[in-house]
Length: 248
Image 1 (spheres, rainbow, N blue to C red):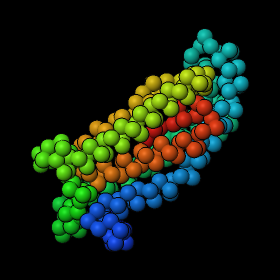
Image 2: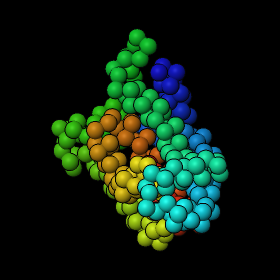
Image 3: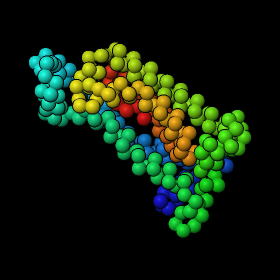
Image 4: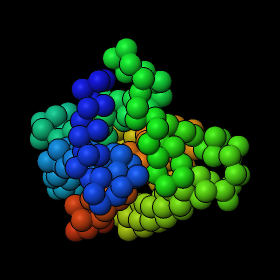
């Protein structure tokens, strides 16, 4: 973790002339963008996989006609078709899973008072008036909702709510535009429940931002915003594709 701390500190030093006291917060945002850029090829591969599944629509329709009365046979035949065509119904989850280590590193870095046997100097940095190692309840206890630190969280909540609303409306519109593809996804074991819950997943980010250290919240907000923009461009020519991929 000390290596990770050094990386954040070096990025903050580079950004200090532009962002001054908020340079470490800017470094976290830049680090998040670099992580997302690194996994972007996987996101593009996931989009290609979604388009490949769309091309299988006629065969999936035939399987539903043939095995519509036997759910087990239909699931088995669907999985066999995906395997034969080398299409994974869960490929869209891979980019999100690969980001988890970076998030947990950020969380632990700003949750520990010491690093490598010495004090954690990063905890003294802030985004405007909000300490990067603090949480929302700390801001509420120091000035309240509309205090200097509370206003930083209100801005983050507003951004997350805007992104979540965008994702929700887009996912609902995609499912309504192509209900057949959504039904195909529901044939994969467990995917039906996931499809119903997925449009609401972005709103769960509000809870995450409220309970994790501000540094980790910045990572989550930046990553969620990146995801919304990335999905808009990767799936803009495929009405229902985004409905089958994670929103965060």
